[in-house]
Length: 304
Image (cartoon, rainbow, N blue to C red; front, top):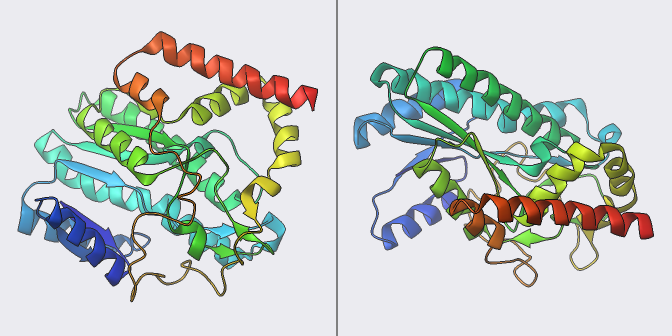
């Protein structure tokens, strides 16, 4: 496994975990927002580890706050890493996979690829862009009858250190929109998608299913619900807000490894029944659960 990241200490920590589990890991310091660095990383990976079978795009950075409070240069930097980082990674992978007519690309997405929420306009815009980019690419691969596969994993809120070091313009500490899941839930979903890329995308977590179904059925109602709840649900009084520029311009884990988990272990779920059902093709159960969840959300909002 090759791991690409900007922060040296965080990268070394991840490599140590892979090796402790019995795997081989190659650390590569690279900024995915810079295409030449991504191309050079891919070249080095194939030179040292052999042909790339699976490429996972996951990097992002963010500027948290009202759109009008986020300066243009911060919005641009977040877009470079979160959207164009995926584009550069996909290009580097395809350059090699198309020549061999095999390989898998996994785009780590979010429920916010379909449903925008307040305070995260840069992130939501980038995730929407990744969704459209991936659909366009998938059509081209199908047209060419290529055996290269591309799939997308739409994740719920995940308890990673991102909320400790993101660039924020809000007075209180940012938090994921509950329900929050542990990173291991996301990791299992990405691994399953890499092993089963025939499905165009995977939805992870009942909240993701409910959100996407509600957005398809009653998007206007969801607008009003998020206008009422989206500010409070994404901030907490328990922790002070992060200081400085966060990891927007430079890595926050260059000298210290923060590990995999964020500050919300006390409320994060370690499993997702919906994910298990999805992996085991319990399609009817997943659909019923999603519709029920969406119906519950709408009913709760109307009563309130």
